Image 1 (cartoon, rainbow, N blue to C red):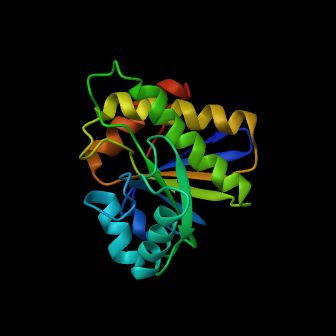
Image 2 (cartoon, rainbow, N blue to C red):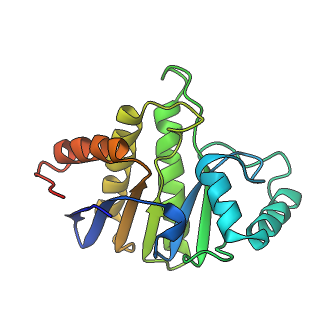
Length: 191
């Protein structure tokens, strides 16, 4: 795996190329759909590797707190099932519709609400995929800027999370995050 690391206050942010289901953080974030019943991409991979316990807990959430589905930008937590991470934070990112329908704000909410759940539950490490950039069509150049700026802002005001890992599936996605991070954090990031 290729790693890039930089600091925000006392926290560390890492950019990693890899498989989020293999990351050893206390929580991983699932780029879920509102049904919480699994799907393709990251969502499907987490449900497959995590096993039936995650789906069972998601069904209970749908029956109780979210009968109409989890709203875009919100986040909920389940156990990690068979994953290395003990918790999965499920969040729904926005579908890209050109950028004029509050997509950036909803995407930022997905990151903030996921981090908030981690803090509420005393979790010190969390891994994110690139939310909404797969099937939901959010352009990765725009999405990664929202992600990095939002996480940076959160860590500057709340120092409860020690490690945030962005897990990118491809070398090209990692390169886009590296370029954005070098601007946002005003430093050279080397692999």
